[in-house]
Length: 160
Image (cartoon, rainbow, N blue to C red; front, side, top):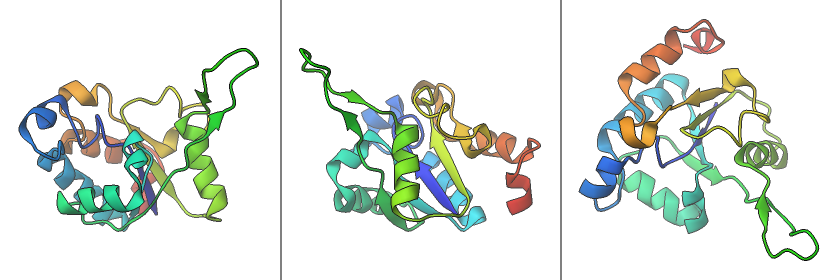
C-alpha cells in the first residue's frame, strides 16, 4: 500500500506554521501514523515540499515523527510554454502520481491524502482520494476525518 502525501493542509496547518519550527502539526502526524500503520503503508510525497529533494523531505518528516517508510517523491511534470509565452504549466499532481506509479511499475493499492484535489480528481479514482477539506485552516488530518473515511462504504473497509 502506498500513501501519496500532500503536506500543507494535511499535516501542516496555519497553526503549525506559526508554532512549530519545522511547520508540521504533531497531532496530524500521529493520525497519519495511525493510518499508515493500519494500512501497512509506505509514503510517496506528492506535495510541493518534494521540491526540497527526497532526502531533505525524508529527514524532515522522519524527524517530526512520521513512522512509515518514505520511499519516494512524485516527479514534477511541467508542460513547455506555448509559443510566445514564458509560462510553464504544471500537468497536475494527479498525472504526477500516475507517472510515479507507471515509472515504478507499482500495481498495488494506493491512497492520495490531499486538501486540494482540483488537479487530482480528474486523474485518480474518487475512492483512492482522502480529501481533507479546508485542511489548511481547519486542522488538517484529524481522527474524525480518518474515522469518517473508514466508515463510509468503500474499498478501504476491506483492507482494514
